[in-house]
Length: 214
Image (cartoon, rainbow, N blue to C red; front, side, top):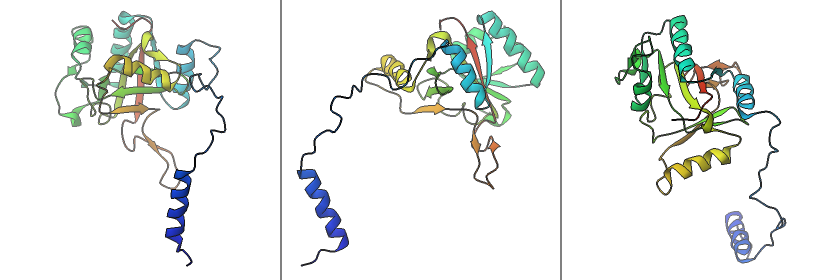
């Protein structure tokens, strides 16, 4: 009896599952990094890759310079509402930043949203965020400008290193959402024309503080 197409496929799958296949590359060391380590420092690598995908990188030697840069940026852009939901950031910046920090939930009034991150990934210029911060899921998506506060000890080279930071921090209770942000929101679906801000913030800034996160 000749088997039908579907039955033939299922028979082949059953046969393949029952037949052991030798690993063709059994000597491959999967624990070793895939990409060669960079020749330059990670902050330079990140800044280069991040800028190449339309990200705005602001280097701050310390938190004092962070305050100065944030004040200057808010003044230049005439921001009236910077939304911040993380208590640690509010405590650090309140009464030192001239621009009004808003802790409300009325996001349509937000000029910018300021969040922390879990890690910066130098090789791809990406930012790793999770739902476990007080900013949750919304603050990195709805405002037209997303500001990310990051510190030197959050900078890693590759994605696997970033995941390891998350696992070390949360252990057996990982976040329900882990998101990798690589540049501002963009699409080229319409007539193959690149449009920024289609599904999220039109601008993405990293305020990088060259000292460990305290």
